[in-house]
Image (cartoon, rainbow, N blue to C red; front, side, top):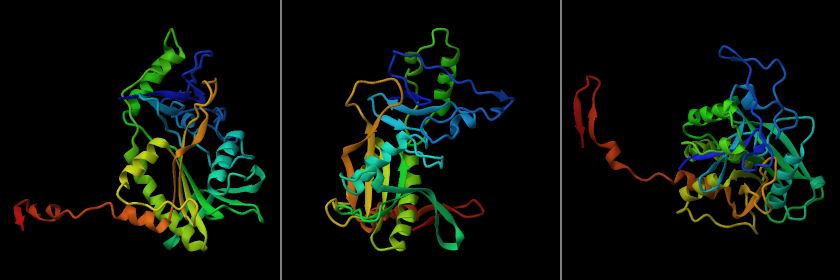
Length: 315
């Protein structure tokens, strides 16, 4: 099973009432030459498209053969880039998150955020939190933390990216160029494994920072449905406690494509997947991560080689 381009520079490809136009990437040899006129990302507050700026095709998300969305740009779900103001897309995503971690009754003016906030760890190493999210003074939560580190990872990279890139480039010059041609399936697939490996470090380090900073702080992760399902499969035997109505310290919130209305020109709308929500205890969650390994006795015995390249049997 492959994937198809779902969004090109913020425009969904499964609508044929308008024609998506390719963006030509100016190059001088192997270097990209935008001369300060690189197009602005439709999902950020005035920042240039990171893919176009680096000479890549501006594919924001792809779709699996079964229709599932996989976000493959880090700015797509809810960009953390510091623009002058939050745009409508960021406001929408952050409001949905706020209603699920604080209270369904919170209003936009209640939710306060900081972006790309620096976090300190031992030996002077630094991490950046995607967001710090809290409520205005006097507003209360329904069960969880009142201040959280909020991380965004809708998806990640795909296999065979070059195949997809060549397909998009062929669409640029296709005489009968169409949205249908652009969304033709190619032999690429989501790399949930790589996304999960990167996410584990975020869980452990940033969550620990939140726990150490102050009693009652927490961490929440926003991911796509594919990454959520992959994670839940990894932790299926952990029996994580459901603490939604109690004192949870870690939340996992999945976003999916909003299919409540027929497809409209523009970006694909995203909505919290109410069937993919986890509210649990941070320490229990981390312990479940650590406990994924099983004893592997055969790995530590058998045929070795010494530094003279001679085989040695170690019982």
